[in-house]
Length: 180
Image (tube, rainbow, N blue to C red):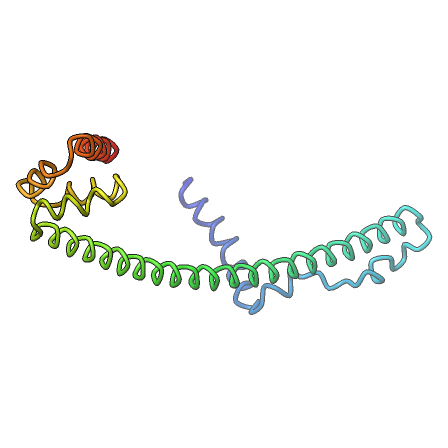
């Protein structure tokens, strides 16, 4: 009994609703507000509260429109700034890549020069190399001595006067400590 009553009620409400939906092709026309602000006051001009409310609503609508225009303008400005920043970021990244490649080339050139210089000192007579190294700045001479073959470095230090050899050895030790 209950089920048949529920089915009957469902049909009673569903069929007219279905017909109404079928007849309505465009729902928006039933839900849209078509009244103009001037039409809102039709027949209410003698009620001061209604007139004041209509004016306040009109003022609020105008303020909202101005705010929305301001927001749209600011959105456009932000989008333009973001585009400019992205472009600048791309430029900076490309410049950074160029700088890195130039730096890598420069570092490779310096390493090559140092390797050539070390090879030169490796081939020199230890006494002659000692004479040249004693005239170089101590930190530079210590760097060269650290990079030559150990046997060559030992012969060069042996050929240097003891006081200068002690200074070079201290510089070599200090450089090793700074590296770590």
